[in-house]
Image (cartoon, rainbow, N blue to C red; front, side, top):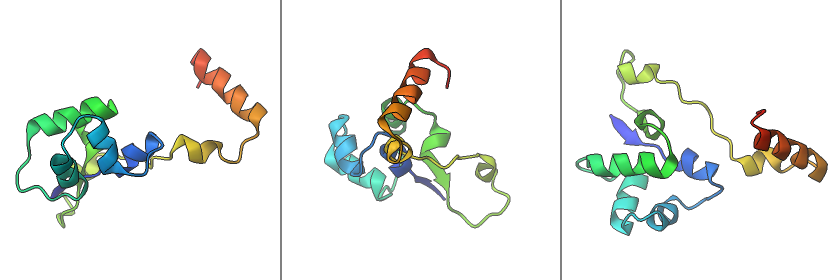
Length: 109
């Protein structure tokens, strides 16, 4: 079965409440709850497209296969572990963060 898996994407934005995040991005609370809790009896392509716009990602970044078929094609989709930037920076000194910031600004990272 395919399920929405947006919590890692929400964490990238430094947020911990996915429903509130989606509502803030323009989705209704009902739709947002259905997506977060995977309580959807049918899929609306508009919602999937909107999620891709919100997160600036592809469908492969949003969906995860949870079935028991070990040969399912979706298992070949690589999904890297997502780490929030706040977690990356939490142990860095101010000068280290400024060096990283400058490299990001210049496109060196």
